[in-house]
Image (cartoon, rainbow, N blue to C red; front, side, top):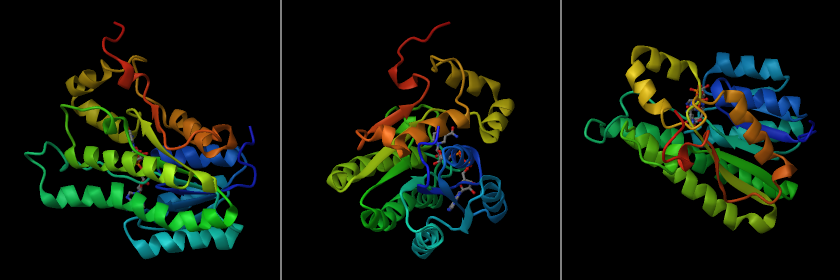
Length: 254
Ligand SMILES: NC(=O)c1ccc[n+]([C@@H]2O[C@H](COP(=O)([O-])OP(=O)(O)OC[C@H]3O[C@@H](n4cnc5c(N)ncnc54)[C@H](O)[C@@H]3O)[C@@H](O)[C@H]2O)c1
C-alpha cells in the first residue's frame, strides 16, 4: 500500500520500539520520514534505514521542537503528519506512595508537556498545507486503572488523551485531524526484561489480554499508518484503542 505517497511525516522517539516500527511502515507506504530522537545513534540509524532525515531533538525543549519541524519543512517543503510518540516509563515512577516529585515531574515533561509542545508547533505548519494528521501516543492506562501503578505515567497519558480530543474538535474544520493512539502492552525489550525478572507479574498482566499475548510494535505501527492516512478521513478526536481487547474484557478465555 502507498497511502502516504509524498506525505511528510515527523516521528518523535523514532529510534526505538513503536516509533522505529512506524518509521519503517511510513516509509513502506511512500512517506518522506523525519526521525527525531534525543538518542543520536538510534535516531540516525533509523533515518538511514528508511532513507529519511534525522533530527536530534529533546521533545521537552521548545526550541528543539520548533527546529525539528522547521528542519522537516526545509528538507521536504512542509509537514503533513506528526506522530508524537516519544515517552518514558522509568522504574522510579511507581505507586503514588513511593513516587517522588522529581520522578513525577520528569515523566509529565517527557510524556505530556512534549505533546503540548509538538502540537502547538506543528499545527501552524499543517495550516499552511491546508490540513494534516496528528497522532499522539497515549496508552490503554488512560482509560483503565491498574493495581501495578505507575502514577505519573498514567496521569500523563490521561492528559494526552484529553488534549488530543480537544485539539481534534478545535481544528476539525481546518482539515487537521488529531487522534490519541492507546496501545496495549507491547512486546519490547524493556517488557521482556521486566517479565524475565518477575514471571508472576507478567502472568498477572497477560491474563487480562483476550488475545493472550502482547502486541508486536509492527501491529501498533499499522494502526498509526491508518490514522495518518486518508483512510481515516472521518476519524478525529478519537481514543483509538489497539489493545488486544483488554479494555473490553471482563472474563478472558482460558
Ligand atoms: N511499549 C509499550 O508497552 C507501550 C504501551 C502503551 C504506550 N506506549 C507508549 O508508546 C510510546 C513509545 O514507546 P516504546 O515502548 O516504543 O518506547 P522505547 O523506549 O522503545 O522508545 C522511545 C524512544 O523515545 C526516545 N525519547 C525518550 N525521551 C525523549 C525525549 N525527551 N526527546 C526525544 N526522544 C526521546 C528514546 O530515545 C527512544 O528512542 C511511548 O509514549 C510509550 O509511553 C508504550
